[in-house]
Structures are given as structure tokens and as C-alpha cells.
Length: 111
Length: 112
Image 1 (tube, each protein chain N blue to C red):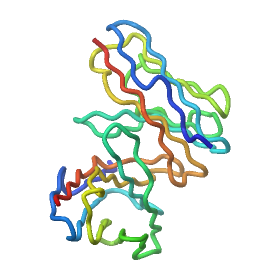
Image 2: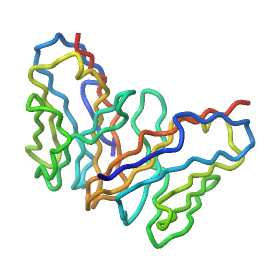
Image 3: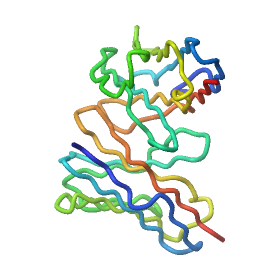
């Protein structure tokens, strides 16, 4: 069956360092992959979409890679700040419109 | 656009009562999703609609759950009868052509 795994439930890093989150999937061949941010008490907010023919995508301090051979996406936040503390979710289309989410990684940036 | 609007934001009900959650998607979006989020199970897709038609309801946990989308600007998720294990945050999201999803603020349901 299709499965999405995010590497850890929680990640704590020092301010200024690069945070790296991992999303692995099995039994999928998605045309694209998305990353979302969720703050407590709020709905997820879209951050980035990367397509299967793209190796890397950047947006300000965010960078996403997509390796369809490894079936893995890496999400990087460079020069991390306490305001980046949130839960980050990866999401994949299991069909044309059906979007499935990973369980998320709770990122904490300590000053 | 005000984004996806869900109501109510919070709902506390007694076991056995009927609960109706409401969602207004972003105007022009053709896909609508209902998700349930709990600590144990994360964000689970319950059902999604495309052009107001239910496409996949395989995530609906039981017959006690039903969803409708009578028109492009309104959807409901109903639980009848409600049970304590239904307590969760329910999110509605909409998208255009399966692109990025826009989520509402969610409804926090507590069944006592």
C-alpha cells in the first residue's frame, strides 16, 4: 500500500543552523511533492511544490530536493530562526486530485 | 478572498448527538477535501469532491460519517451518532486542479 514517512516526530536545532527534514515514500510514483507548514491551532499552509522532473527548488531560505530513485524529498531551512518553529508536513498525490499527507515533523529552533 | 471558511471553530457535544461541520471553499476551486487530524493518526483524508461530485470516500471511517456538497460554494460533514473517539480537529481544504491545497482554520470537535 502507499505510504509516506517523515524521518522523525521532532527535531531540535540551534538558531542559525540548517534544519533538514526528510520525507520518504513507498509504492508511489508521484508527479509532484508538496511541503506544508502547520502552526498550533491552525490549518496547514502551503510552502513549496516540486515536480518529478525537478531536482531542486528554492524559495528564500527554503530548499527542497526530490529524488525519484530514492523515493525521497529533503526539506532544508537555512539560517534557521525561532519563528521557523512549527510542524512541517510533506504531501503527495495518490491520484489526480487525492492528496495524502505524512505525519509531520515538529521542528523547534532554540535561540 | 477570505480563504476557506469553516464553522463552527469549536464544537462540544454529547455522545449520540448529531454533529454537522460546514465548509465554504475558495471561489473558483474545483476540488474540496475533508481531513481529520489527531495526535495518534496525523492528518487523514476522509473524502474528497471534484466539481461537487464525491470521488473517493474510502477514508470515511464508518457509516456514521457522511458528506455532501450541494453546490460549488458549500459542503457539510455530518456525524450521526457521534462518539467520543470522533473527537479531533476536522479540516476542510480546497484546491484548483489538484494544485496546492488551501486549508480552513479547522473545527475542533469534542464528544463527551
